Length: 66
Image: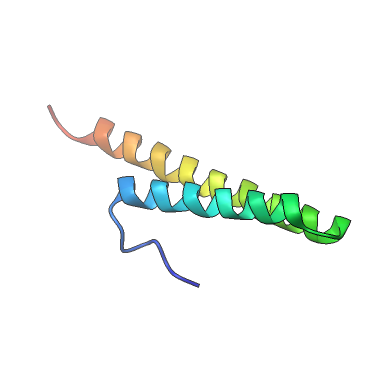
């Protein structure tokens, strides 16, 4: 799987959210309950990753001296 670690934080968040959207679409079109649940959880995980990057970026900005 493609690693987003080498992307700048802003681009990384966009990519996580883009992937979350793809997983949501897969969840909507899945034919079994198990696969719907799996793709839904994967989408939630991508959103959590995006939130973590956003939180980390905000914390780093707070640490910089003015």
